[in-house]
Amino acid sequence: MHDDDAAKPPAHDPTERFSDRVADYVRYRPGYPPQLITHLREQGWLPESAAVADIGAGTGISSALFLDAGCTVYAVEPNAPMRAAAKEALAARTNFIAIDGRAEATTLAAASVDLVGAGTAFHWFDPAPTRAEFARILRRNGHVALFWNLRDRDSRFMRDYETLLLAHCRGYAEADSSRRADEASVRSFFAGGLLDSATFANAQPLDFDGLVGRVQSSSYAPRRGDPAEVPMLAALRELFDRYAVDAHIELRYATRLYVGTVS
Image 1 (tube, rainbow, N blue to C red):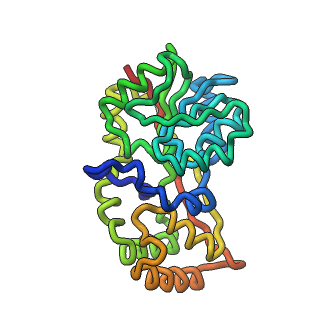
Image 2 (cartoon, rainbow, N blue to C red; image 1 turned 90 degrees about the horizontal axis):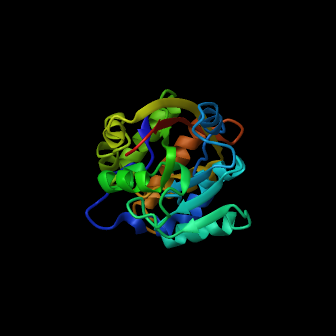
C-alpha cells in the first residue's frame, strides 16, 4: 500500500504545490470512511461537540467528516486557493472556521481544541515544531489523530495503475521512495505517546473523466498542456478500458489511522 502524494517536503516552500490543481482536488480526491469517526468516538478520543483542529485541511475533505460528526472545526491550511475552496464548500456551516496557518504555527489559542487531526497531510510537517505546537493548542487529555488513504495494491488493476504512475508521472518514484507516512515516522513523532492504530476499507468508484481528474489532482502528475500529459492520458484510457465494469473502475484504499498524545 502506498501513500498518495506522501513525498518528503522539498527544500523550497511546498505550500503552493497544489495551487493549480485545486479544482481537480475538490472533485476527485477520495473522502474518508465514517468508521474512522466511529472508532474515535468509541475510544473516547472525540467527545460530543468536540473542537477539532484539522491541520493541512486542504479543500476541506477531512473537515467535512468532523463537521458531519457535530464538531467545531478549525481548518488550518497555508495554501490560499485550497483554503478558498474549503470556505466555498463549507462556509455555510456555522461551526467551520478557516485559518491561514501551518502545522508548526497554527495561530490557534493555547488549550483550545480537544482533537488535532491531519488527513493525508502529516508528511508535509516539520515534526519537532509541529509536536510542540500540537501540545500547545490541545486541551488537557486531548489527542492527535493522523490518518491517510493508502492505495491497496491487492487487485491487478491497482498494481497496473501503480505501474502507469511510475511510467508516466515524473517525480512519482521520488514521492514514493521518500514518503514519510510510515509507522516509524509516526512513532518517532509521538515520542512514546502512540496509543492506537486502526485500518478501515475505503473505495472510490470513478468513470474515465474521474480517473483522469484523480491523477491530475496529484502533485507529481504532468500538468495540463505538458507534452507528457498526452501519453499518460493514452495509457489511462487503455487501462480504464481494460478493467472498467459498467463504465467505472474502483480505486481501493486502506484508510490508516494513528492516535496518540503529545507533550
